[in-house]
Every structure is written in C-alpha cells, then in structure tokens.
Amino acid sequence: MKKSFLHETAQKMVSRAILAADESTSTIKKRLATIGIESTPEVNRQYRQLLFTADGIENYVSGVILYDETIRQSTDGSIPFATLLEKKGIVPGIKVDKGTVAVSTLGVDKFTQGLDGLAKRLEEYKEFGAKFAKWRAVYTISDGSPTETIIERNAQDLALYAVLCQEAGIVPIVEPEVLMDGNHSIDQDKAVSEKVLKTVFNWLASYGVDPEGIILKPNMITSGKNHSQQASIEEVAEITVQVLKKTVPHNVPGIAFLSGGQSPELATTHLNEINKIRKKNQSEYPWRITASYGRALQGEALEAWSGKKENVQKAQKVFLTRAEKVYKASKGQL
Ligand code: 13P
Image (cartoon, rainbow, N blue to C red; front, side):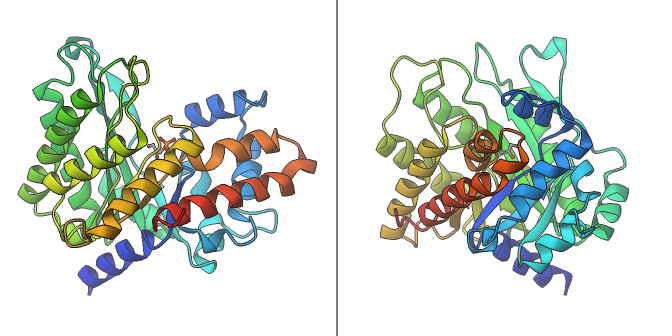
C-alpha cells in the first residue's frame, strides 16, 4: 500500500516540471535583494502566492518544493499553500535539509545538516500536506575537492534521509549537486559527477531505499562557469545522458534537473536537447527527464514583479511563459 503510494506519487511529481520554491531564509533574502526588496515572512508570502496562484500553473508544474516558513503560510484568502497546490493537482513537497556547513579541515568541501530529529519533522510536514521531501548535498570542484571523505559522507546522509522519508510515506528527492562554480572543464565535471552518482546509488541500495520511490535531482554536466571554453549545448546534453546511463538504475521513475545558475533560456535549451536524445532511444534512457528549477523558473518573474502589486499579473504571465517552455523542453518539443 505504502509502496505503491510512493511509486505513484513519484510518477506524478515528474509528469510535468517541479518548481523549486524552497529558498531558505538566507537565500530568499539574497534573491529579493536583487530587485531591491527586503525579505520578511510577509513579503516572501506575497511572492510565493504570486507564483502558486498563477492561472494555469498546473498545466506545466506537477510539484512544488516549499520551505518550512512557506508550508505554514496561506493565501490572502486563508487557504494553506499546500492545500491550494493539492487542489490544483500539484504535489506539495518540503525542503528538509538544514543547509550546508563548512568544516575547516575539509577544505572547500561542505556537509549538509538536518538528520537529527528528521523522522519527527517528516511527520509534522505530512500533517501540513507534504507528499515529498528534498535534501541537497553540494560538491565543489577545486584542487583536491571533492574529497573521497565528503563524497562518501554526503552519499550516506542522502541514503539515510531517503530511507527515513520512505518509511514515513514521503518520496525523497535525492539531490547531489556538483556546483558549476569554478574553472573546471566539462570532462572534470563528468568525472566528479559520475563518481558522486555512483556512490549515491551504492549507498541508497545499502540502506534499502526503494529506487522506484525516489526522484533524482542532479546537475547537468557542464563546463565550470569560469572555464575559458564553454561546452556546446549538444556536448552538455550528450555527456549528461552518458553519465546518467552509467549511473542511474532503470527503475528510478524520474530525473529532475536543478538549474544551478544557468540562465532560464540555457537551462531550458539544455533540457530540450537532453530529451531529444532520450526520445530517440527510450530503452537506454527509461526515466522521465524533467526540471526542478529554482532560479531558471523564477528569475524572469521575480524581475517582472519587482515587489510591486501592480506588476503581479505581468509577473505571473512571465512565469507561465517560462514554465510552459520548460514543460515542452521536458518532452523535447521545443
Ligand atoms: P536552482 O534551479 O536555482 O539551482 O535551484 C534548485 C534547487 O532546488 C537547489 O537546491
């Protein structure tokens, strides 16, 4: 019973795109600062309301990741956000990691906090309507990093998180993010991402995580942001699917990429190109491949809004235009 619920929820989550609207208190503060607005719980609520009430969002978005503050908030008409989404046929989810911490002895490597008390928090989030969760691990490519130590540690933490979610009847989004920051080549990203994903899936299996009841949220394989020669769209797509083919079990129902700082247009084009390859050979790439973008789905809408009431409709239109493109890209139809 529980198992089939997890499988069905996972499939539903990736039927369209997943909106990552789970910016932590410090991240939403940074995002709003780019439009000259100060973040407060009320401003954050108004912004998220703009996104979630966009007319027709459910045509392109099948899941929304919320933050602790947001899952406790409601619309102007007092409808809790999770209820609103559920009514629209969108699966509500929740970020459950508590961010990353640097440890001086580990160099640039960081580990993710949040396992303590997680089982209890999952029960509370379920009461608020969450059907899935998200945990993000980060990896920086730089001299000697990521180390073996952090690759193993992050993978084990992701596995423990995932198994706790499944026991609670919640689908875990497993997010190992190899950052684009740095001047590494696409080949370096390929080597690191492949190792990271292999290690993650090994530990998921060791902890008894059911692969049919998870969603993988990886980075696309790209050149580092500061690398002098940026890989082409075709290279990014080709290398990304090669790595996925080598590392992701066939019974994982879906892969939903993060955008990681790519522009909305580039993240959309890459997703489209990846799905064009997938369409040609679905037996090699059996998973649904979609997006779980934060910045690439929201960036343009945030700018159009600029914190002004009179811009809400315009911003919703801009958001829906991007969401439609991302949805089409998830089918290779652009
Ligand atoms: P970006 O698409 O902005 O990278 O955000 C996705 C996300 O959820 C990061 O954890």
